[in-house]
Length: 481
Image (cartoon, rainbow, N blue to C red; front, side, top):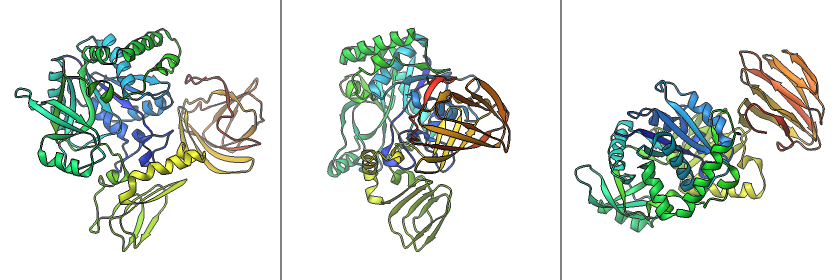
């Protein structure tokens, strides 16, 4: 069989899962009750498939370091699996991403290499059944089929697209696709489920690199032409983050923003569907997340620490403090250090409207958590007010912040754990526990952890403007200049 290359598409803000999912920390990074993120589960599932030696992840360049670190933290991954990354400068939906991924796979492994396109934020409970479906799909892909995975519906969901099956394809258990149907009304969804001919559209695909390139050339030639030109510019570029390929920004940004479903799958006459009962969920709302947690006798489900008094059918997710619910019915309660969501279970699809309002108000909580991940570690905003902000900064061993300068703020650093190596203009010196240093506005500076344990310090900022965009980078080991 031809080489199987999983291609993980990792992006999307997941606005319905606010306040855990945010623009700078999107849905794939959301941890479930077992401590693993959706991205980690997807990567582990792909790595466990027979014959996989390389996994390509396509994500936004802003998410690269978090993506890399999440995948590196996984245990039990077979040794020797190559981890490759294509970094998008902006989101252009799935068709441009698949096109660039196909060009990468074709160049590295040839026309016959089989691409298994997976979303980073889906959940599959039965990996063995899914793996069997992938084997069937790969065999069909080798016959120049475009394969999609259909999920046998358990209820008349109106939030999913549907696939109507046509005639059977031999004894493979797969079917030709008669048509794709957009999200239907409840009446139509009930009709589809009762007919036995329809499946939920999982948004996962399988095809050879050569086949999908040929289909793109036939159905959306302008997109493939633009993607090919972008790929040639990308290969000539010498910039980018270590361990990844940064897609050329100027040419990629001009590509048509369209999904692979609309661009190819719904137009092609060579599409097959492999149905499955592998416990698939797109984890698209807090209702879906709550279903992953075992309920008590009254239907309550809890992640974190909570006290319930006369509560029924209430889901609570708490991060770092006790949440008490008294006399609640049919509620979703999600508590994070800087934001609290309380929603009726029947209105969880409307959480995205909260995010829309926060964006209109330019409120930081639509984008950032109180704790923000950076390639060198994390920072947590402890308190802020007029002309001051206090942060807790953690720098990983070997981590180095960029050589930078701020126009409007000064910074006072107090080391509470570990040892800091500081560059301040032309000086270089060490700051130890219980020592401090002051960096006035307008001065070049850099912070580094030369030790083998985390460097933890408290930073007190003061000045007329304290926004995160007041930063000028002169040099950066992570390629962010």
